[in-house]
Amino acid sequence: MTERWIHEVHRGDASFGLRVTSFVHAEVSPHQRIEIVETAALGRVLVLDGVFQTAERDERAYHELLAHPALCAARSIARVLVIGGGDGGTAREVLRHPEVERCVMVEIDRAVVEACRAHLPSIGGSAWSDPRLEVRFEDGARFVRECRERFDVVILDGSDPIGPSAGLFGRALYEDVRRLVGDDGLFALQTESPAIDLALFLEMQGALRASFERVHPYFGAVYLYAAGLFSWTVASGVTDPRAPRPARVAAIEAGCAHYDAEVHRAAFAAPPFVRRRLAR
Amino acid sequence: MTERWIHEVHRGDASFGLRVTSFVHAEVSPHQRIEIVETAALGRVLVLDGVFQTAERDERAYHELLAHPALCAARSIARVLVIGGGDGGTAREVLRHPEVERCVMVEIDRAVVEACRAHLPSIGGSAWSDPRLEVRFEDGARFVRECRERFDVVILDGSDPIGPSAGLFGRALYEDVRRLVGDDGLFALQTESPAIDLALFLEMQGALRASFERVHPYFGAVYLYAAGLFSWTVASGVTDPRAPRPARVAAIEAGCAHYDAEVHRAAFAAPPFVRRRLAR
Image 1 (tube, chains in turn red, green):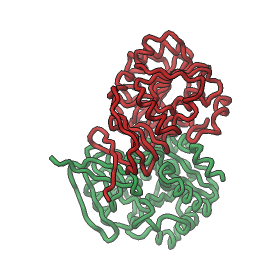
Image 2 (tube, helix red, strand yellow):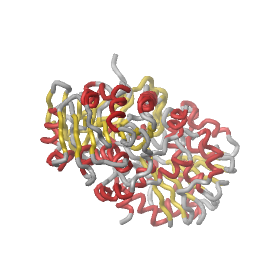
Image 3 (cartoon, chains in turn cyan, purple):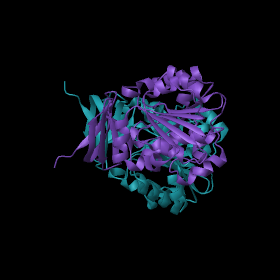
Image 4 (cartoon, one colour):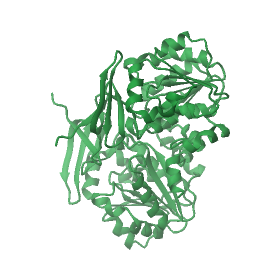
């Protein structure tokens, strides 16, 4: 029997592969190639343009750490904007907070949402039917440029800085988000792996610092990304995101596998090789 | 041109691959197959029986976190025992502490040490010529069983629980180490990835708890191991390893890339999916 594998190659030099037990879905949307495969190690995995995005048995390590540090530190979380996040996992975590009154999700690719709702239903879960969720299929960068609504928290759940997510990296977007969240709001996003590409991590930190007064990266690990140390960042005008609000954590922690108040505080400890470069 | 890659397969279901730019060394010792390859992503990599052990451009993420939490928390660190660790990286970190008077390293496979000294000289560095280091080529499990010398800190730098390292896992060894370190000493070891194999992680924690009154796992990420969340553990009779001694950290932190006092404290924050299982 021939084994079937799917591999993601990092910059031509390293690869992470998963053994595939079945090919569940494949299509080419106007934006990208979308595949969902069943793997032996991690359950079903969403692959966009050949890059692993999220896996059933691993996604909470990413989504909980993307969403909850900002949501548990912000002054208010009544209005939340999610840019990207077509698998629904980030919206699901956002909507677990009872204080959230409205969550707008702006995803460029309707086909990703439809494929994930059909074949990865556990990731979006009850979010898709939550009346507080508004899903808009449009370009996230344009949305934040033209948006006049204010949000308490903006979460960028984009892919790598290539393909349809390319416009979701860099100063123009960050300036627009800074305007949307005002002085008190928070902006959370994944900021790649300083272990694999320290220069890219530092470039993103620099771009964020040009638009936000406070920029706090935090660290963890996601098996699917095979990245060693992975990072997210919370940026803000005035709010220090490093200390969670106990009542906010208490409202969600029973359902968390990877996030709690202790993990929140610990995640902001930067390894010295990162801290020294950030201090320059 | 045909590209050359080397892959490590995890339990038949996942694989991590590195592009090889040259094959530096290969031999079969009485204990295992030893390979050293030059890779584009991580420099030279030591591979034992097909399993990635250590890489020039990544090894400090593992060795600093294996050695320094125990060394910076122990009451005394005059006498240190390293079991395994044939690449020399753990001995190098141990010997950076000026308080260490004697470091015994017990490695079963002389060929690993000779290959690493020849082809991975930066990993052992000055440790190999340090007069405080005594290298013994013998079975680590037998050494601790028969040893009557006391050590302040014992560090187990073994491979996975297969092959020549198999005897370095489990209760018999841990009982012997508990006797060697007494009530005040500390035992540090890698305890695999709870993200990949939570059952194995918990089995090791259980075996440690049968021999040690205090067992404190801590967490981080190592790119080469492609394991998502990786873990180490410090076990002891009475000493709480979670708070580092400031003078101990101050003596070594300038030379650290991955370890400092803040990382030390933060690393002991267990994710809830691990913490809940440990509390049962």
